[in-house]
Image 1 (cartoon, rainbow, N blue to C red):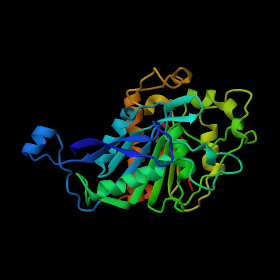
Image 2: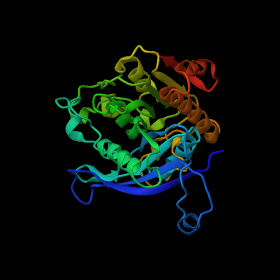
Image 3: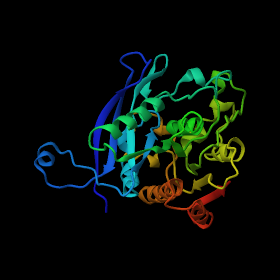
Image 4: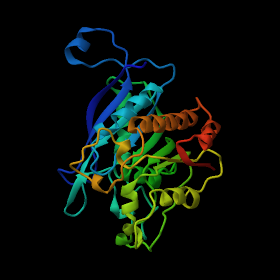
Amino acid sequence: MTDVRAFFTAATVPGEPEPWNSLQLKVYYPSAYSDSADERNMGFIPAAKPEQPYPVVLFMPGSNCHPEVYSWLAKGLCELGLVCITFSWIKEDMPGFVSLSPGFDLRYLTPDSFGKAPSCSSLPTLLDAIEKLNSEGLLAGLLDTNKVIFGGHSAGGNAVLLNSNREWFPQLIGGFSYAAHTGASTQIGFPEDTLLPVDGSVPMLIMGGEQDGVIAASANRYGDAEDSTPTERIGRTFDEALDSLRGDCHLALVRGANHFCFAHPYDGTTGRPFLDWPAAGDESELRELMLSIITDFIAACIGTGDHANLAELANHPQISRYACK
């Protein structure tokens, strides 16, 4: 088993007003303890030296989801031979509403501006941080800065779906999301039932849970008069909004999984957990399944696996729908 360690760093987002311009990063990596004096005194454990530089996963959090709730995922990805970065950004996405945010830039989420530039202002800063990490410190020279995967949950998954574009981010080789779709809010001027397009220039894995009460209860944002099903818009995002026929884009809908089983252990004092439905089944087993799907997808993206391997999900008893295109 890989000994996974992590360290903290920070980065400033250009153009953002103080005090809302600082990202706090937690960088998870495979380590190799050598019992040196520095390690014993300071706790900074050297990285394990890889045969090939480590690809990097940038994970985008859900709104008001502290990055520690994704530690289970980050550790699992390090087991695959990756470095995973989670982060927190306390940000005023809308006037008067301060929250932990993946970093939406509402200037590029309107009908007139969407698609003209990235709509997630944290991403350029995070990618610059990867370059800095590769130039100094514990991970210097150990990162493959041309193999970056975006991942995200809930609002963070939406940020991944809307910003996984190689024209904007040429180092991107794949993206994955859970509990997210590209439905566009009528409050910012989009017509009812609008689905924003997913670029499709990189492999994508779109996942959802059949017990997602948060998505079901949020349908009014998109013009629905009543609650929708938990996965309708997730499935339609794959079917209608994602343009790809390469065979490397996947949809996996998980029986029993709700919105926040992906965030563990979840702090219910913030966010909208009161909208969620109970998970059906053992949540730890659901996370193990989702981790295995994500690691198979990333392995295919970095060349150590095959996208065809995910086709086995079509016969998995816990998967209500699998599709590939």
